[in-house]
Amino acid sequence: MGLTRRAVVACTMACVGLLGGCGGGGGSSSTDSGSSGVGASASSGTNVLFAGDAASGSIAAFTTLSPAAGTITANVFTKLTGAGSSLAYDQPRDLLYVIESWPFNTPAVQVQVFTGASKIAPGAVAARTIALNDFQLALAMFLDKTNDTLWVGGTDTSGLARVEVFQHASTLSGAPVPDRILKTNQANALTVDVGRSILYVLSDSVVSVYEGAATISGSVFPNRFVYDFAGNNLSVDSARDILYGATSQGSLLIVPGASTASGRVGTKVTLPSTAQARSALVDSANDRLYVGALGGGFVFDNASALTASSSATGVEVLAPGSLISGFAFP
Image (cartoon, rainbow, N blue to C red; front, side, top):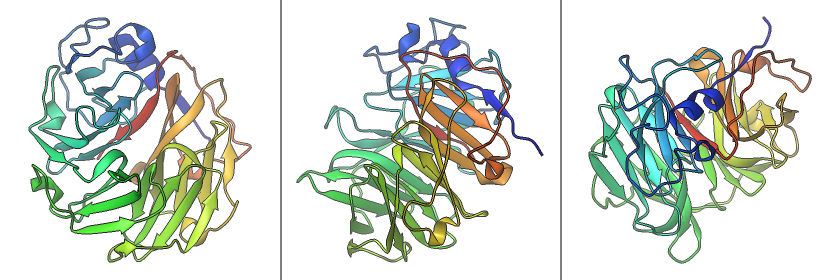
């Protein structure tokens, strides 16, 4: 089966004013009606794919998991200070989680929780917030939907790296006390292979791999390291045991056999364009990879078949000034 690549975020969200370089981003208001593009009307379908632009702090929703190349309507529903780097969607409970953390403590380090995400409309505000009072910066988030557990990583108020784990995520509000605190390497991004109980934490260009993720706490040392990663997101396909991310050169980095990998073992896949990858999130159920980039975004079908010599087809449209740094889907 051949590989296909469809330019999606670059051409779609640019048309509704999400991206900072397209005239609709970068403002200080907390919501965005999409007035610079298709208008304020919400999509008529059900939202299933969400994307964030860190350049403008905007979040948009799409009614398909597999958008075709070209212009489609995205429901730009909100702008938050520092939003866009990490999102998570719990479809059974219809909750969207968005970290709001940048710049430092402005207005606060917190997770915004939107209810009824599948039907969210422009002007929506979070139903509740989860205050992360131990953090001065939190960029990393992972939602274990099966166990209703939220993982958050970043830098604490003393400037030290930490990861906090919260159970019963769907009911949290206010300033909850974490069930576990891990003193790890700096967490610019993190992901968890829940079935294998492995935590992957990205700091600079190194992924630290921690086994026993379901129970570890306190000061923990990695079991091993994987090198040459960068960007805003890590993502693991637990079914196929493949780790995805971006490199410091802006290409994709793919690590098969991730649960036992160590060292410089990844396969680099260069995007067939001038765009540089900054984030990657895999949909294991559909073997589909969403890639956020500086100036655009892409969808790769048959993700597990990607190799250094992969040939991708499709039309690309760039949106200068954007930074697609996070995705969320069921």
